[in-house]
Image 1 (cartoon, rainbow, N blue to C red):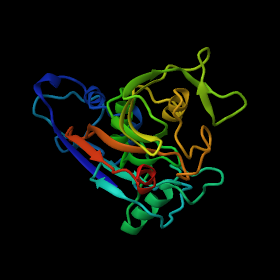
Image 2: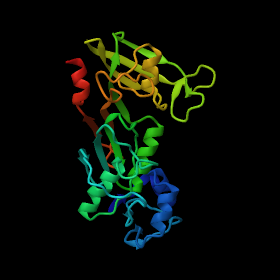
Image 3: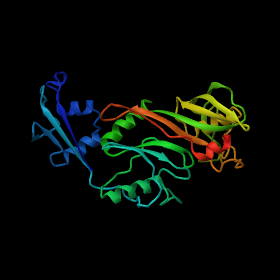
Image 4: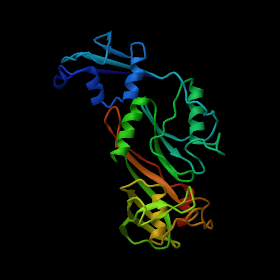
Amino acid sequence: MKRIFTYTIPAEFDNCTLLSYLKELQYSSQIITHLKRTENGILLNGVWGRVRDVLHTDDTLTIQLIESESSENIVSKNLPLEIVYEDEDILVINKAADTPIHPSQGNYDNTLANAVAYYYQQKGEAFTYRCINRLDRDTTGLLILAKHMYSASILSNMVQNREIHREYLAVATGTVPSEGTVIAPIGRAYGSTIERQVDAENGDYACTHYKTLETKNGYSLVSLKLETGRTHQIRVHMKHIGHPLPGDFLYNPDYSVIQRQALHSHRLSFLHPITKELMEFVAELPEDMKNILQ
């Protein structure tokens, strides 16, 4: 992977160091170290630049970001991969159910990472796997992958600053109120490394906004937006208000209408990390969730 960025130094950065300018552009220390070790990684007016160099108005700064090695220990595997959008900096994926995000014990070659590794292997391109927003194995829908370390750095900062906006759709048991907000702290369930629960004493603050879109066949289609990103937040909060998701093996193991938790990452919006253009994506409700309401 090779990505070249060219900047014309604006007047406000006249007499600033090259390092301070790169920091302003959200180049992390790790990236700057990588660039310093790359031949012609930093060029100032066509000459190999040093981070202590002083910039002047209308100078030309060229950054050559080169990554020649792929992620280690991720085997390529020809698996279904629905790419919603791709450019030089990001990938947006519509993840299928029963697809872990990363390899782990017992999930060595059946993950999204394996599918992406195969995709780039077929293109003859090196690719380091960097998943920005994560979904549980059986939650479907939209997520972002960064194609290089610079877009990953900016997107990670955006996640921390809650600048990536997501809307989920869930099918919940029963008739959910028309709209509301759940504020209930979430912590790890005693004796479990996976399960979470509402824990007023030791849990972390968690806030979920919901709006019911449709009620049919004893189930409700609910739109959800999160103010916090706690593990299993939607699943725990919906159970807490008496409307768990069907098919949820941890919180409501009722498989009569669906074989996995009825949760889908439906809408995703954010500013592109490089172009700053507003990006908006929608992934329609999967068939197994539609069938519950038909």
